Length: 236
Image (cartoon, rainbow, N blue to C red; front, side, top):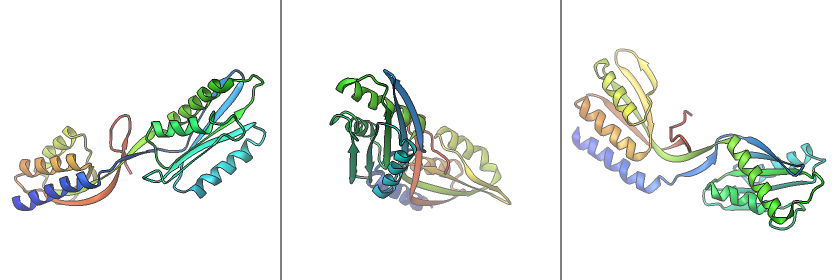
């Protein structure tokens, strides 16, 4: 039994170093707005998986805000930023699309589209003012959308006796994990989602504290999402 557990721990740790290439994505579509010298800047943020999908959102924005002066945007798509696009849509070169793109890069985001619509308020902002306004609007939109971290981890399924429930609950809490899919029959079944280093520690502690009586099944290569600010695993 001990050899099997050690083999599982070794596999998780090795795979963890190899495949735990995390990146950040937005949690949901969001929006935000700022006003700068009577000009309105409306940001709309979308999760996108292809340039075609992004184009649909851009066209939708142009129709919705048909009377706006500019609909500027930036997108980054792919785990390795295979697609990067930005548009000033008539604003002075480098004052709109590029600042929005820099916000996306600054947050290390992938598969993200940000469109910032401007309703001109009659006062010229100048190059610096435009850069600051488009940057601020993009940040407002991202604040509403939220950011989550995508990682590759493990799903650990457990079967154990009622006498071990309190121990396993304590271990889970200490490691910041939550028992999910809990079922009570003649024995208890449950599961936890964890990143590789935490998964290895969880398995070791459960095995030690239950004297190897808990049955564990590990599924590697599972996508896990974690709140970028709180660090908590998000329920899927």
